[in-house]
Structure formats: structure tokens, C-alpha cells
Amino acid sequence: MTLRDHWLTWASTKARASAPDDDLLRRLRRALTSHLPAPLGPPRGSKTTSRDPLASYLSGDPDAFHDIVEEHAGRLHAWARRKIGNQADDALQEAFLALIEKAPTLEPDTDLGAWLFGAVRYEVLRRQRERYRREPVPLDALPEPSSPEWQLDRVLINERREQVLTALEASPNVLEQEVLFLTFDEDLAPKDIARRLDLTANHVRQLKFRAIKTVRKALGLSS
Image (cartoon, rainbow, N blue to C red):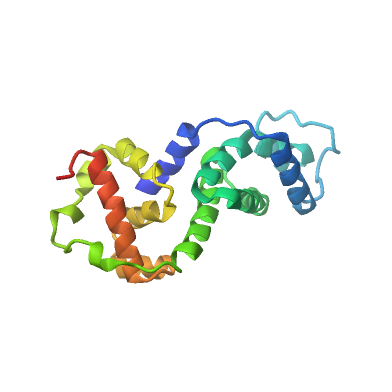
């Protein structure tokens, strides 16, 4: 399992449970209802026998999608709000719209909580990237590439993954997390990560150093 996949499972179980407030649910229902396909099965109000909301939704129960929203919206919104503040509403709406589009292609055993965390994380990442790419990069503050401050052992990361993920999650900047995932999961160089994220290589070096510094501190490796 990659570091990113581990995070998706970990985040969906470790995130603090948070019941969505009525106003949030009303906003989501208003934004999403017009995008839901017409029921293909039982009429509205006629529940299927499936206890799986996704299966019920796909079998034609139009209320089931709102059950999914009510189950997951609270913690997803709380997580997104800690990262991007007032933009969390838009990120959450886009994640559920993605679910409407992709639901027919999902495997029956899909971990819906992890899938939705991935969708929300993508929207948060996209918004942070747009903001971050406009910021200047003071590279004079970075140590030389040969410095021990840049060193992070792949074996140690794998052995202490939960500690690593906890440290990364504490940062509001999801881009730092993503740069580390691309470095250790896909073995990408900074220039390739920059191309993938549509950032400059200097931005990526700064993000990578911040992420490594965070993880080294959490693992007791800081000098």
C-alpha cells in the first residue's frame, strides 16, 4: 500500500466525527439535488432492502444519496475547513458532485469514506495550489541539498507510517503532504513533481523541505 493510500484509509477512520449542521445539509441538498439522475427503480420514499447507501442509490433510491451526504459531510467539511477555511463548502460540493458522476463505476466493496476523503483532498489541494503558486519562494532559507536536514529514510517512513501521517496531517498545507507522497510513492524528482502539480521546481523544493523537516521532527531526527 502506498503512503497516499495509507493516508486515505487512515484519514477516513482517524478524522474527528462531526455531525453536519442543518444549514450545511440544506446548502448541499440545494446544490446537489438538480444533479442527481432520475430514479431508475423504486419511487421516492420507497426504500430498498439494501443496508448499503451507495447500493441503494445505484438501485434507484433517490433518498439514499442524501443519506450518504448526511453520514460523511460533517467530518469532511470539518477537515476541509481546517485546511482552506471558507472555501470548504465549495470543495465539499465538488467532491459529492464527483461521487454522483463516478458512482456507477465504483466497485461494490469501495470504501466510500476513503473515496470521499480522496475527492475532498483533491479539491483542497487544487485550491491551495492556486493560492500557493502566486507566492514568492525565498530559496535563500533552504540548506544545501547535501545537508542532513534533507535526509529521510524510506524504510523508516514505512516502519513508522502512522507517526509520519499524523505529523503531515498537522500541517494546514496539503501540498507538503502531496509532494512527499509523490517523492516516496512514485520516486519523482522535484522537476517531475513540479510538472505534475503545475508548480515551479523552486516551489516544490520548498514544499519538500518543509515536509521533510516536519517528519524528521516527528521521528526525533532533528538536530
